[in-house]
Image 1: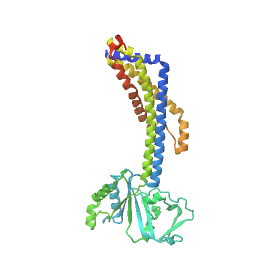
Image 2: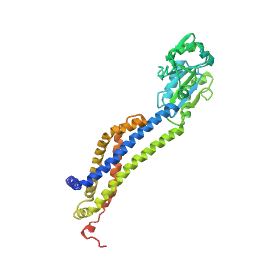
Image 3: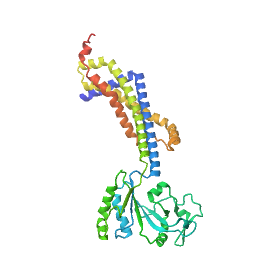
Image 4: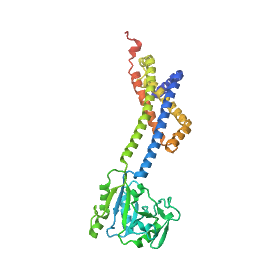
Length: 383
């Protein structure tokens, strides 16, 4: 019985909405424009901040990245040492751990490199021991070479680091791992190890040191040392905190603009519904006087708002697809990226935005309609 009454109420609400087609159309258009602007601003915000964050990471290092450096293996062989350290650090790292093997005090043998004096020669590996994919060769002339232990290292095996690369992998000459055996023949100093860990957290040095202590503490004691600042140096690699803060500020500004437009659209729909409720107070009051339940009156208001929001969202999707070429041109010119306005990631934003509009536009009108005193209709008060 209650279900049939609710169904009849929903049909009546839809009939009332169709009776005021012009107002319904304008309300749907208002919601559609607000939702479209919300989608565009949200997507451009994501593209812009993602591109800025990638540029910051490229120049200043990934946020929450650290270097762990040591010249002792605590009595362990190289393979066992690297495997155990990588395995332990990977537990607290949000990205794959990579490591650098460095041979100190090496002087390249063929000119003009011998004028540079002795220095560190480094080789970079992934966590599994495979070569890390660096940009070997870079813009070096094809006839560039380095000579190690009588073997010529061609330009295509030489990595030219940027300032960010030096910060991440360390200073010194970086070569392809295929030439590590030649470097090993030229150095009598202990191998220097550098592990790169990315936790994403601003202060992970205590956690990193604790992890190393748990993994290597017993071996260090047997070796006659401790896992402390002397044997293991831990430093933070990422920089550019001010630029990162600016990026977060830009994202906040975009968010305020997008949500502001959406709230304005919701408020416009709210004003429209309040006018409708005022004009239909006689209907709501009479319905209550004749025995209608307040939930039915709430349905009369809520169904119309819901229909308006649903039609508005559908129209917003159509508008977004229609404006996709323009958005792509703006995104390409500004951020060098495509603006995919309607994508799986946009669905949660659409749902959330729709709920916000629905709640803002219907809550007060429903309260106004359901709290109508039937006597105000049957016996209007004289002013």
